[in-house]
Image (cartoon, rainbow, N blue to C red; front, side):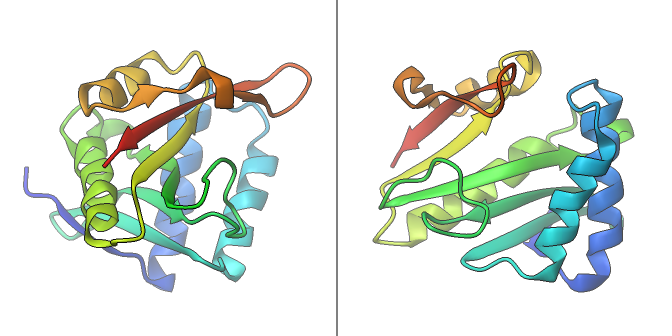
Amino acid sequence: MDINIRSADREDFGDIRRITVEAYSGAGYIDDEYAYNHILAAIEEGYSGSSLLVAESDGRVVGSVFVTRPGGDFSDVAHDGELEFRMLAVEPGQQHQGIGHSLVQAVIDRARLDPDVSGVVLTIAPDMDGQHALYESMNFVRIPERDFLLSDTFALHVYKLAL
């Protein structure tokens, strides 16, 4: 499968929304589709200090990832010198074909080109076993002291790749 990673255009937002919601809600990771759509809509309105990458295969958007810096509108855990990525999503019928890996590698490659970036961080729910395995296979290390509660019942783990 040929995978092309590029910056998202506004025309991609509908596909990004559909893929992200299907990937997360279909896998049972989110149960409030409205709330997640609200986050995605906010990204479309303007995402200061951030970028959105898409993966294309055969001319179709099949995945996306949101990249931000500390202090950006959607940064949760990035410290100075870190790039953060969020909401990695792959079309459910296209998963396990290297698309997610390619998107994460594109984030890492961007980070390595920036002399001010010394690490890449992400948050992930504890029950996302396949995703934990992906990040660990790419040498991300869990940083438990940076884990946090998103709500009273929903924790997020933090992973970092030092560059």
